[in-house]
Every structure is written in C-alpha cells, then in structure tokens.
Image 1 (cartoon, rainbow, N blue to C red):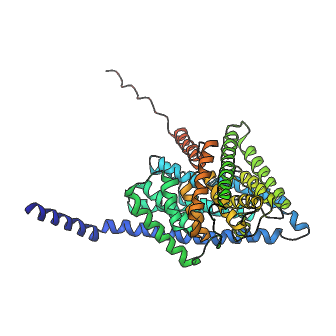
Image 2: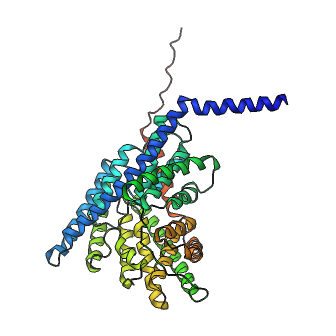
Length: 455
C-alpha cells in the first residue's frame, strides 16, 4: 500500500513538473513557433512558385518571336542558379530531401549546419523560384522538406531541445504536408523515406509538427485537392491489366530515371574539368535541352507541368510525346546543379506514362493517369507507401486505394530489380561524404608538442 502511494505521489510530482517547468514550456513554444513558421513559409513559397511559372509563360507564351525566348532565358537562368548555388549557397543544389536525410546521419550541429540553416532556407527558396521562372522542370516540394528541416533544427537550438534527428524528421514531414496539403503523406514520408524505420519516441513530435504546419498552411491557402478530383474507379478484373501495366512500366522507367541521375551525378563529380567551367557548361547544356524540348512540345514540359498532370487526372488524354519529353527535361534539370525538387515533375511524368498506357489498352484516361503516377513515383523514390498515400490524398479518390496501392507496390518491386540503390539515400551519402571531406580539409593540422629544454 505504501509503495503504491509513493508511486502515485511520484507520478503527480512529475506531471506537475511537466506543466509548471519554464524550461519545458520554452522548448514547447519554440517548437510550436518553428512548426507554425514551416507552414507559413511553405504556403508563401507555393504562391511565389506559381507566380514565377506564370511570369515565365506570360513572357514566352506569344505566337511570334516570344516562343523562341526560352532558348535564351532557360539556359541563362539555369546557369545563374547553378553559379549562385555553388558560390553563395553551397548545399542548396538539387532536391533538398537528400540533404535532410544526410543531416540526420551527421554527428553534430556544426556538421548539420552545412546542409540545414537559415541561409540555405533563403537560398533554396530564392533559387528555386528563379529556376521555375526560367522554365526548368523542377518542383518546390523537395526544397520545402529542406526548409522545414532547417527551421525545426533552428527551433531545437533556440529552445535547447535534444533529439535533433527527430526534429529534422518532424520538419521534413511538416514540409511535405504543407506543400501538398497532404498531412497523412507527410507522416508516412517521414517514417518510410526519411527515417526508414518507425521510432515511437518521435511519433508525437512528427504529428505535432504536421498538425501545426498544416493548420498554418490551410489558414493561408484554404483546403484544396492538389490534382483536383477523379471519380474513375478500377473494376476487377477488367481494369487490373491496366494496374499491372502501369506498375511494371512505371517502376521500370522510374528505375531508369534513378540510375541515370545517379550515374550522371557521379560521372560529373569525377570528371577532371575545371570546376567553374564544368558548372557553367552543364547548366547551360541542361537549360538548352529543357528549352528545345519545351518549344517542341508547345510549352507542355516547362516548369512543373502541373496543369497537364491535373488535366490527365481529370480525364484528358495527354499526347504520347509529353511523357518522353518530360522525362528528359526532368533528368536534365536534376543533374544541372540548380536547386529544385522531383516530386511534381515525377508525378507529371507518371501521368503522361499512364495516359499512354491507358490509350493503348483502351482504358479510362483519368484512372490510367492516377495509376501511372503511382507506379512511376514509387519507381523513382522507392517509397511505395508514400507514393500511394500522397496520390490518394492529392486526387481525392479513396475508392481506388487498393489499385493505387497495388500499382505502387508493383512499381517498387520492379524498380528494385533494376536499381537496387534508392535515389534519395544514394544522393544523401554523397552529401554526407562531401561534408565530412570539407570539414577534414579545413580542420587545423595537429601541431607537434614542443620539446622541453633540457636542464
């Protein structure tokens, strides 16, 4: 009896300490402020990104000489982005998701600051907007992950909070949730892609960050479904050939994209050309590829191709060349050295692939686009749970959960056979190795201990 009373008394004291401790309340308030800021910045980033794309199409959308302007605007803009990223914002290049993953595996805040910082938040947002204004095939969702992780890591420092790895995870999840208005996908992404394991200790931290960032984003942009709505439903067994075809083809093409991205990235890093000349040449050539294909496809492959993907989801068949063109320009943009994500362009590629398969099989265009997105996206990122959850949330059709899940799993399995190395995690190892190499190269050399004079 005495032991039970002592236990209850101890529990009450601990509960009282949790409620009244000023240190704990400071940590909570700073954490909440970081999550709120992630939602606000994500919403503002989305608006600015849309405006940047609108500006590009307004300038280049004419039927006369204006249609040829991308031959200048896109290469020049991408060269400017690549140079600014390398000189002023090193660590901002590419998606941002590999940097957040790498930061979780680094040892301390000093090492993490090379990949997650407020300086990189500013550079990432600004240069992604410039890239979109230049017509590059990039998205804002991956960059939002790096932004969210940076803000939450700053919160940890200001609030004196431990568990930096868990806070990076929370910031990444909050960034995805706010960017797409997909809270479930943010949580699943954190568990599957960022953490690659479930850790119950960070469960509440991730959920809290997603909720607060999501509320902030909803307050600014309202509730919406990213790709509109589709009412098409896959029927068994008539539509399951389409499910299998989209899974196999999506996984195969996603794996090819992943392998080409990694191979080109590693080859460019190993090449012996002078760094600045190589940087300018690669960005200019990539920009020229994006411009030529964009003009040839009537502007369909510039930017995120959000409108093309949404039209496909809502039942409009896309031309066969859209899928091929979007695949190539996204690959060119990914290896160009500019900041920018893969999520939205990859979903557009998947919608185009599904549209082609649907036309060949005589299936519903909207259903084929959704299944193509699931198979291809799972093939690129090799995260099938994230793929089907994010696509179900973005299309608002919960009747297709099982077919979309099946396409994602088939795409994942196919991709693993061709590309055993997941793209984001392979890139994260490159980033982590770079940071360790940089720190070692700048560390002072140990000095020899001076000999004491002999008596």
